[in-house]
Length: 364
Image 1 (spheres, rainbow, N blue to C red):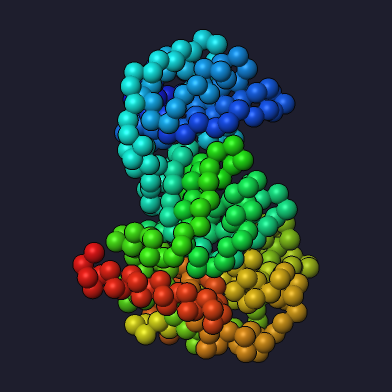
Image 2 (cartoon, rainbow, N blue to C red; image 1 turned 180 degrees about the vertical axis):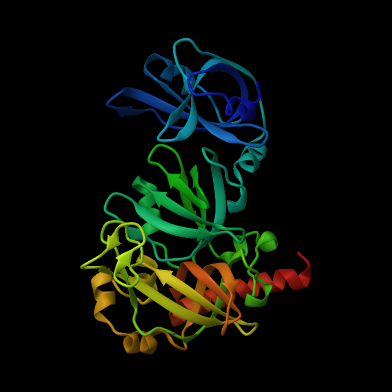
């Protein structure tokens, strides 16, 4: 059975799976015992095979590029991510091998093509400075087709922590897709983070950076422009403390009258990119980050005039989801992410987009 077909089976079923070995982890110890993870490649999908205990010696003998037939493997999952389990009832047969170049091609993906449970490699640029949560390092990576939230642990986290906004990077790991949110997890056992020497190493042929006049209602795109206004009387909204929904006329639409609503960050920006204007609404931590604040309380201690002084006239990169045509601005959108650029970051962004324009002019 092809790997893609086996992934569609119900959890607990067994299957014979044909695949190519793309990665083999070093054995590691857990509370459940010694474990090895193997990344399997199919025609369109990749997936992870896990073995523990006595079968570890069989799996760690595999080499990258081996063409294998896995007999009677169990279809399982881990934290909602599908995977195969190789146990005492399973058998392993190696029938040949493929070239390393073919292996690397099976790993390469664009963000827009990533599927839940996949294991893949993407190349792009950091759209924020990495931040350390204490246990992992997190950053957003844009590859011209979409944005993935990258989470890294261990040595990979240390590498990612040394990078900055706009730096080009190659990331490899386990893919999670929840709605329109894509994540790549670089685990201690499987995955890699590799800084690239410069954006010249990226394949920019598929990159899309729309202008405001390219966007329509329903589109999602990343734009570069200038903040021309902060059109707000206040920079927060009043929320129901039970559900977080906006309180209007003293009442929550779900829980009724609210005596003490909470203040939640809200930041509207009008962004002009020379082709049109879009009003971008930022909520919660997105508003806090765009304002350059360390936390929500620092943001709420500001007033609108402070925000205007900080933001108006500054270049900004924003990933927007267009919700409507505007009454004053051309478009109205919700901001999925926004970063007001420093002079250093603006130079990086101009260099990257200049390379992209050059590729288009040369027809590459």
